[in-house]
Image 1 (cartoon, rainbow, N blue to C red):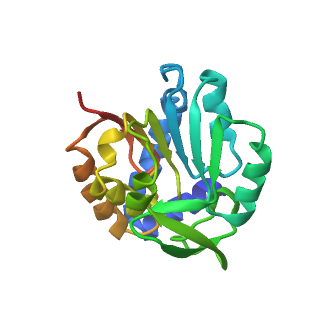
Image 2: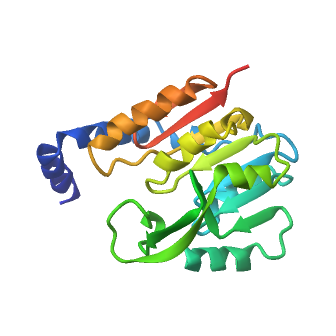
Length: 218
């Protein structure tokens, strides 16, 4: 049934084929093993988790590099409360109940588990705070980010250009991002952002609209 649903979706929306084809390659090549290999992180490495959800990714990073310092962002009020309770006694993890974006403001974020989004139409949303990238980094001394993971259900189309505009992108050594394909126009949006990233980073592997990784040029 799932295969039939995907086939029908692809027939009606041929542009979704980019995601479906990449997902097949992702599974066939066991690319998750490469995505989740953080053994090369330096001791005390600074890690940004954009889209913390329940904290499993942060746990994975800490399992591989126990001395990592994690800045975890989760704007969904309920998930943020759960994360603060989970990491309350862990000095390695700072939980921010906000999103970073191009400007200060507020957004509505849906309550759809790990698909909760301010971009996709997943039902009614809860208010969540957005802090401008420029203001966040102006208020903090964070000269280098060893690893940033971005999985924010469409918010990447606002966050990544904001990181470039604020001059923060050049501080990020390793960037892992999941672009989401909610509509055909986002294919051009992704291409535009990738062109921005190519000025400072090299794409070391890519499965379009599944996951891709960028490394800072030396």
